[in-house]
Amino acid sequence: MTLSPTSLPRRRLLAMLTAMAAAAILIPACSKRTPKAQSLPAGSTVLTLGDSLTSGVGATPDTAYPAVLQSLTGWQVVNGGVSGDTTAQALARLPGLLQEHQPALVIVSIGGNDLLRQMSAAGAKETIREISRTASASGAQVLLVAVPQVSLLAAGTGSLKDHPLYAELAEELKLPLHADGWASVLSQPGLRADTVHANAQGYRQFAQGLAQALRQVGWLV
Image (cartoon, helix red, strand yellow):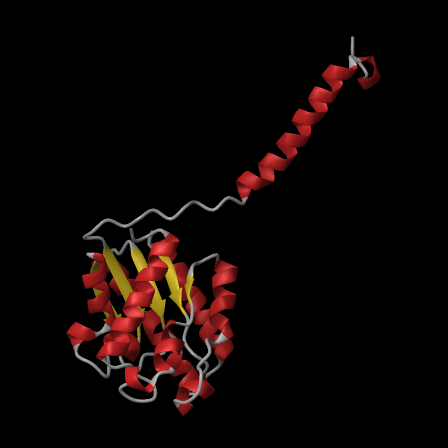
């Protein structure tokens, strides 16, 4: 015999309805849950992909930000910066770097040369999207680093601001973003070697801010 809702005891019916409502809430919540970042132990390999700001133009190799970050974290930080690289050139190099180093984390700081050369910002955004997806597909975690707006960066004066494409990509791809790192450093004449590059002190300040961001994400303890 099939019971209708009106034939069930009131207390039992309320209990069933409550359980069904709780299940309806729980299922979508679980599907949207983002796994907590796991800390990377000392000795983990981290790839820093970028251009002259990553390679360390304006300072020496041992004072470039990847070297400073290695000293701050105990990770093996690979300097994957090539001066003058565009996003397309960085993407072309990335598969070889991933295969050679098999990093647990890729820090992506690229796009300044695209903007300085007045190349398409939309094109740069699409290429950085592909860089992030390629790195993620290798099994690495990804951190995006914002680059300042080109007009302010070229002028070398005033208060620099991040180009909005980085925040947009971070939101779209659900990736952590280190915002205002380069903008803050390159806004201060005492931290610059020229209008578009940091000096040794500037790279150290950037690496320290980056390390703090990595702690907030949970990769660094």
